[in-house]
Amino acid sequence: MADRPLTLMAVHAHPDDEASGTGGVLARYAAEGIRTVLVTCTDGSCGDGPGGVKPGEPGHDPAAVAEMRRRELEASCEVLKVSHLELLEYTDSGMMGWASNDAPGSFWGTPVADGAARLAELMRHYRPDVVVTYDENGFYGHPDHIQAHRITMAAVELSGLAPKVYWTTAPHSGMRRFGEVMREFGADWDEPEGSEGSGVPPLGLPDEEITTWVDTTAFGGRKFDALAAHASQGENIFFLKMGKERFTELMGVETFVRVQDGTGASLPEDDLFAGLR
Ligand SMILES: [Zn+2]
Image (cartoon, rainbow, N blue to C red; front, side):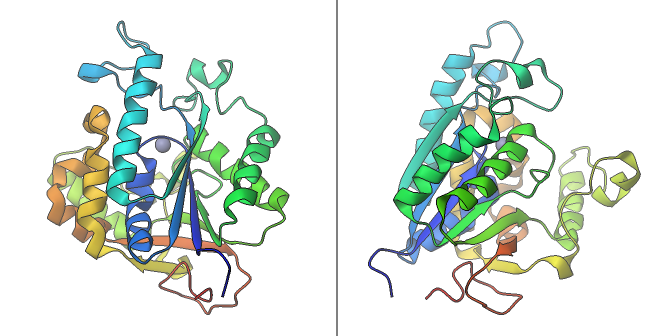
């Protein structure tokens, strides 16, 4: 069909997002012979340091954290058999409202046009058939996730290409099950539906609004191992507490909203490459 391999490009904010958000599709499509390109926008320097030291606490060295997280990201990519890892190396902006949002070089403080131009360059190089990123709220409101969404949508425009474009999401049915498991493992967790009056957009989508359900249960173990490769952030990665089997049960199907398509593949679909092969 084409003179080059079918290509999936996933654009993520931080080291570890590739595993939690799209570890299943990255592993599955690599196994199907599709070229997979991961673009990670920030250096993750607002993550935990060795021994769980938090950003801003004494002993938190952002440069050392970034270096450690780059190595963990490379290990995760090895597990997921990512063909190409591209780092934009913007500085992690931290959570919404942190002073680091406005620090020089922060991803959130970077004009969308700058990030989009660099990403469009990568798109012209790899010519992805499918591009995956977050929705306009970055799924849960993290500034770097929102910015990754913005530069991706602008880069698709700029690139002059017409890939299928998807936003990661979670079905409300799955969020409910997730909440049950969270409570079972002793975490604080409010039902996302309960947050509607709080000004925070509810997480995920009603099941009927999800266009694309990709079964990646055969790759649940890989996805788990990829997350575990981000060991320095282990304290923040709730999923690791579940163990592989529960994790795969809960996270084995990855869900998306298709927002751009030139194939006319009918919806709902169970394959990001439906209509392309
Ligand atoms: Zn992230």
